[in-house]
Image 1 (cartoon, rainbow, N blue to C red):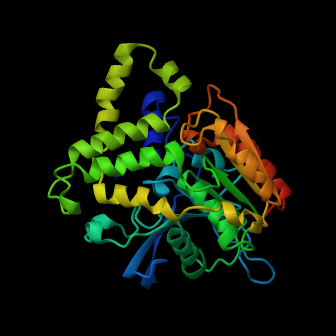
Image 2: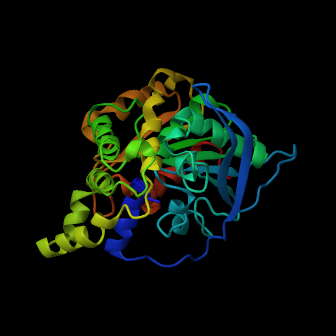
Image 3: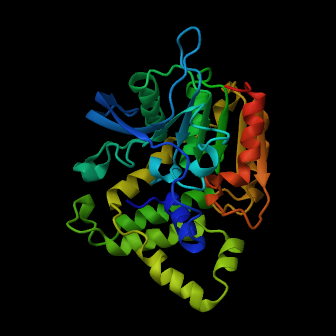
Length: 361
């Protein structure tokens, strides 16, 4: 399936070459939690909601018998747990000596509703799949953590892009459940302005494709998916990095022809539409003052989805009692919006957050 912002990262890999195969992080263990009757915020229900997750490491229990080393990792729009099991993330953080060394921490990575191996429209309901929203997705993540894995407290919640937005919501919906929060590549306000418009463009391109057929298509709406892929790449790209890697017109033409134009292969249009529509209830701004855990938000200055000139993060972080915001300057290491999954760029700030929110565990 199309990884949306996650696939942008895969395209960076195509440009730069793999840093290496899976090395020292442990083999993830897969699990599925089934909710017999899940009720969405709008009142709709779905029987046997399937929630997929992976874990790395082993839970540690304190003297009271409670898990005290769990870390929850949340993916972006259209992504899945797979996007973190790469050299640029797991190979930096989960390896021996890494800040989230899986020998010390119990890593939980969920597939959100509508994503990865969790229940989604393409399983059969198509456009009749319940209209899930971000708060539904967070509530389902909470069920995985508490019911499937029996974890009552989290050392850290960290998320990228949509997962970053979910991280803000975790801080509001379950304020005493974590020691620290780290939202990456996100803003704590409802999605509006240009950010909303380009998302509307994607949804409209898919629904207006003549072959979409109200969601009951017999083959994927190719023209709509091509337009969606182009928009996703443009907004997820990084001009400095792209210019460095594609310095000639022939290189750029070849990259578009070989990578971008085929990037939506295997994508389901209904899955993509619902993934983008899910953000319509996202607006953490009014309740930012209820977040009590230390929070460190990180964006990059070349992120065209959360552009720094808006000044939103700087303004709103003052409403979070223990909040701090870091804007990474554009550099040869940043990757635009996709910087969120290149942990070597921002891991020093993760170290700072861990140190000021509880030290070892």
